[in-house]
Length: 109
Image 1 (tube, rainbow, N blue to C red):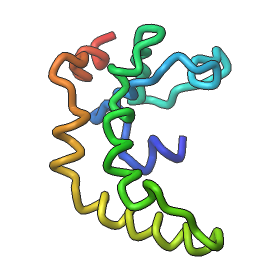
Image 2: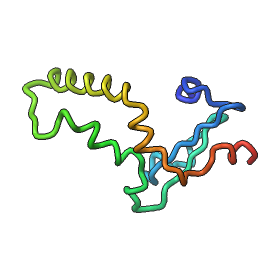
Image 3: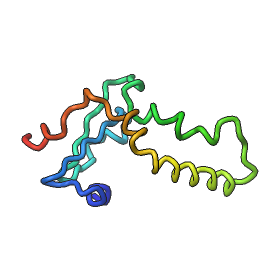
């Protein structure tokens, strides 16, 4: 519910979450707030998972490096998160698949 509130999901704004079929994503106990819909990916299809395309961007400052402390790792991760937050067009280009269902379809049903 807090995610739905943070992104403004509701009657006038639909959020379509594309998920893999991990058990914790697909539990019948999950109650979706108004305006949030799940679209499960076919089984065994990591190439369709948008997040998989982001690993190269996210991992870039960590590859083949070791860190003396957890704090040192956290500093690098925080810096990378800041960089990624500024890369919205590039991230959207990698993850906004044209063949995804139109969220407007879910408003009617």
